[in-house]
Length: 246
Image 1 (cartoon, one colour):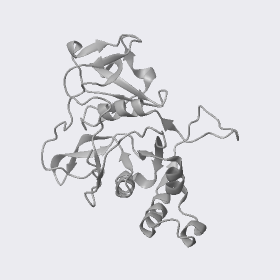
Image 2 (spheres, rainbow, N blue to C red; image 1 turned 180 degrees about the horizontal axis):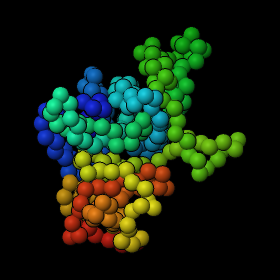
Image 3 (cartoon, helix red, strand yellow; image 1 turned 30 degrees about the vertical axis):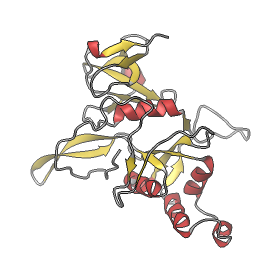
Image 4 (cartoon, one colour; image 1 turned 90 degrees about the horizontal axis):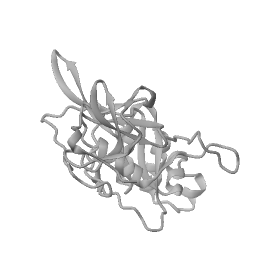
């Protein structure tokens, strides 16, 4: 995944760079500032998790760059939109889920990047200066997106954590940057049935979800975090879809 600033202009038509990949293979994330890249690789010990963060003032790109440069996989879905500027219509990339950013990191790193380094951490020289500087900058941008359907031992809502397979499916569905990607409300989707399906051909090959009609078109709706976020794909022909054998 190449992270591009919201509203940045592209001079050429987009293609789907990773068409046909399986859900366990996620494209690399790359910093738009330095070119630093990092790949998502699940760790056997489970020390890292997918967290969702709120980002202040629509600065998803800035936060993603800082995380990637610290070796953290960061992702925010984008879609093309047509805008008119200086009398010309052009395609630009904009966030599909504005002010939200996904990152794959440890709980300790999540705390550091949302709350910033403590004075004790810095004076004790437990953090490299570069990482401490990045953590401070990120703490001004990031805050947790909380899970309002769960409570911890203190009776508070914990930070939202997304299962790795669910997140991989979501990335696979949204990495095309298609202008037809939409954030949708489940109640307004006309689902054909409750069966889970998988796309077996085309740029969405491997994506799992439910078949629905959105804006008159047959597509796949992919849900994240128990339906907290739902995204519909482009039109997908019936013969590209297979029902998953439960």
